[in-house]
Length: 193
Image 1 (tube, rainbow, N blue to C red):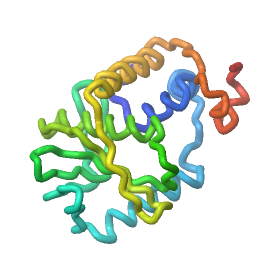
Image 2 (cartoon, rainbow, N blue to C red):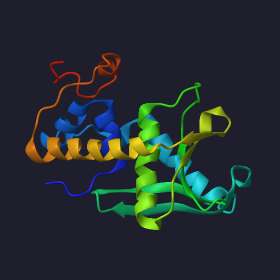
Image 3 (tube, one colour):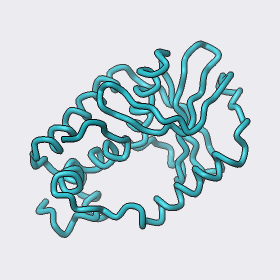
Image 4 (tube, rainbow, N blue to C red):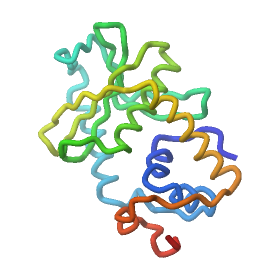
């Protein structure tokens, strides 16, 4: 039985629900730690954490920040938020760094990662969370502001329930409707989709 989910588990589920089944029900590891982007992302996060810890994003209204904050919630999620920005309007916002290039759109996984972190902030700090931010490292640290909608916080709870249902009950889910994802999936050789 799983009790608390990580943002990585949610991202994998959003990529394809069968990812969750293969990794957490059948216990077939994806060996993520060996992938270049994962290693590069960890290096970037460490460099950011140590290079300029006092930098504050005043132009978006931040008056204070906390970095590398581990949080958990009673809805059964936990994770480490890159930065929590405390804003001049009394709200708080998650900020996440991506070793990626901005291509004029926000991926669903990036958006829901901000929703996930926003929920953690809301449940721990009891402050409104209306916006989130992504810094795209491969686009010269481009900062993108994203509105976080109440309906998506509700959808997050449904996603969490679905992931737990797969893991705890061993339900074999439908595969992703996006067939292009299958080409880059580490489970493509054992999945019959």
